[in-house]
Image (tube, rainbow, N blue to C red; front, side):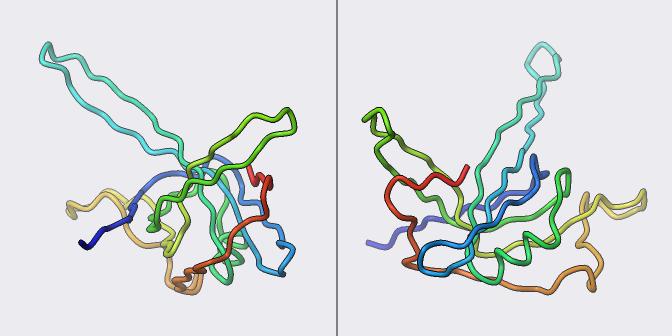
Length: 146
């Protein structure tokens, strides 16, 4: 049976990207984004909630994220869910679920216009278009990026 593990998010960075080089020489960049949801209850009350997501990205796309993304930037992200586990210093088993990025597009809010779209891609010359997936690149046991 065929399965799918795909995540698509549009949100704002909650912190600047941080990069590091793993023991095998691979670049990994991590950052967080927030997504918002708004709805109206049956009684007419407006509600809002925010979800926070941890992002990990490898290779050339990791370098691009490090160089071009900053806190508050609006981004479109595609990737897959990945859950890691490790044992903490006090012997507890820890888990972290993150989105491993395969594609990123920088967005900006559209100026007031007749267009029904809320977002537009950032300037074409602001960052190269790269989609990057690094299968099999795993962190060493116990290594926590966030």
